Length: 165
Image (cartoon, rainbow, N blue to C red; front, side):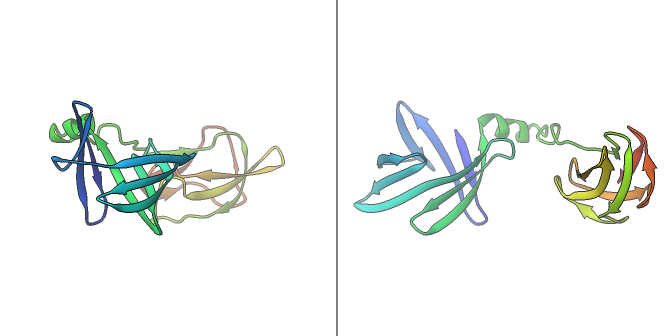
């Protein structure tokens, strides 16, 4: 069983005895695979062109284009649902307390400031090491609690650069 959630829609998809059910109703579709990630679907004498734009297994979402509309769905399987029911769904969230220097170098630019709410992958600072500029990115969603360095500082490997709340 899978659940698909968008902003205003919620679906439960299940396979039983080789048949597909949507919200406990049997789905009768004729699906043709046109090419890589492109499909032609006929349902109740209506024709649809569908394309799988993105399948992100880490963040558990899918982007699907049907005719000219793009839909994003968050996907959960039966194990995700069970973990949520047991209150264990937050256990695998990555939390960090600090950003450390991955190598010795010179801080060229600070991109964030204390109090900034950052998302995983946001640019945080520019570190020059071995004549190359490296952009250090946020390892997880967090709030900047303290910045222990400033532009122009030389840092050593594993030195704490930024602390998170």
